Image (tube, rainbow, N blue to C red; front, side, top):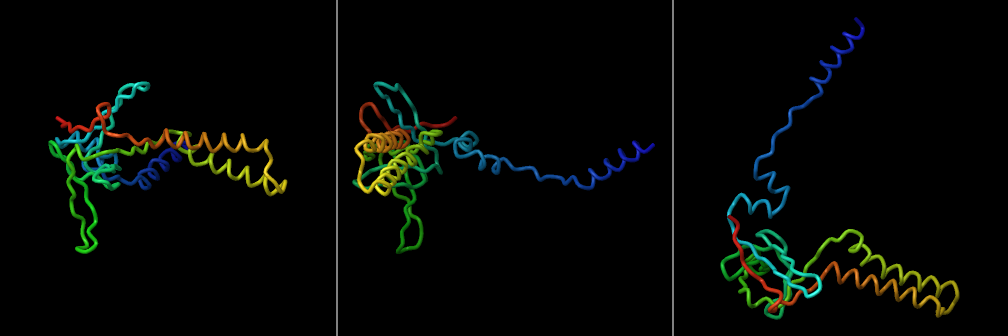
Length: 189
């Protein structure tokens, strides 16, 4: 009897506590997933960077509308979100401080000289920042403790700084557009 009362009270309590959740719309779900999923619903064009390394092989990077793209064109470096992609051009929004609004700037694909990628590689990206700092701290700590730079510390410090720079270069490559690295426009269907 007591067990029946406890069971009934728990059922009533769970019905009172349980709140109905609002279901998310398709747009809200796609906004959480990112721009690549939004392109699956709405047919659109997107930029691709086809990279054909001699050692690493072929790799394709995709840039959809709304993605941030970092590139060099017309002698200037841009890091803006991709606004629009057409058959042979793409546009970004650049702030116009005089008019106090964003204005689209259009680039032809052959005007782009370099694409800068920002990849998040676990441990490697973090090591690209931490290792040079650790090497510098190690060198300064040895200088403070001994009053002079010890010759045995320099190879360790150099290894830390060199490996940190290598890891930073691996995480943030700058890819020149040429016959092996091409910028194209593709379409989702």
